Every structure is written in structure tokens, then in C-alpha cells.
Amino acid sequence: MSNVITELRGGCHCGAVRYRARHERKAGQKLIAHACNCSMCEKVGFLHVIIPAANFTLESGEGELECYTFNSGVAKHLFCRHCGVKSFYVPRSNPDGYSLNARCFDERPGDLQVEPFDGQNWEQNAAELAHLSK
View 1 (cartoon, one colour):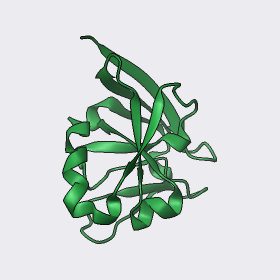
View 2 (cartoon, rainbow, N blue to C red):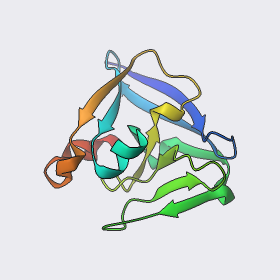
View 3 (cartoon, helix red, strand yellow):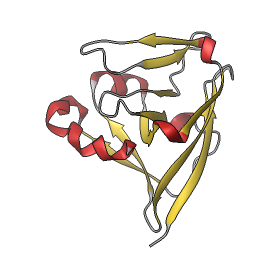
View 4 (cartoon, rainbow, N blue to C red):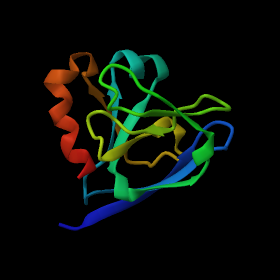
């Protein structure tokens, strides 16, 4: 079965931070965004589309990003220092990739499907996401 590659472009609210990315999946599979219920994602409404780092290009705004870390310090929560929007970050579950916020895409793919992820019980569930950045 062949693979489908979806080009994704997005960024922050003010436009200072812009990225492009490729998401690859098997033909017939939907593009999955995870709605996490952890203390961070629940508050900001982040919808995770996780990709390998090699499939991500920051087009502009590297100097406009601020980084917030907490707990283990592995996740790098990157947000625009002007408008405060976190359009992508390096997740703890996939430190070899990026999590893109589907709410920050320029255009939402028609086959985007949102699925719940139990981040409140992260330790028990994180392994479910590990393959997404490979």
C-alpha cells in the first residue's frame, strides 16, 4: 500500500513564527490529531499532530520563540514572544520530533480526525505516541 504525504503550513497568530511540515501515513488512513487532557494541553486547546523532526522546517521566527519547560524539562514548549501562541513544540513523548497544533494550520486537511488522548495519566499512555516521530 502506498503512503500519503500531506504538506502542512502554519504558525502563530501574529505571523512572526511560520513553519512547514510533511506528515506521512499509509493510504486510506486519516490524519490524526490528539486532544490531550493534561494540565497544559487542556488549558491551551492544543491538538497534537506529531511528526519526525526531519519533516519539519521553521521558515521564520526562530529569534521570536521563547521556551517554557516544567517537570522533567524534556518537553520544550515554544511560543511566540509577541502573540503568545504555541503553534508547535518538542513533546516529552517524542523528543525526536515535533508536535504541531492543528488549530494553527493555515488550512485544516479535510481528512483530519481528532481523537482523545489521556495525558492526565501520561506515564501509562505515553508509549502509544512514541511511534509517531519515527
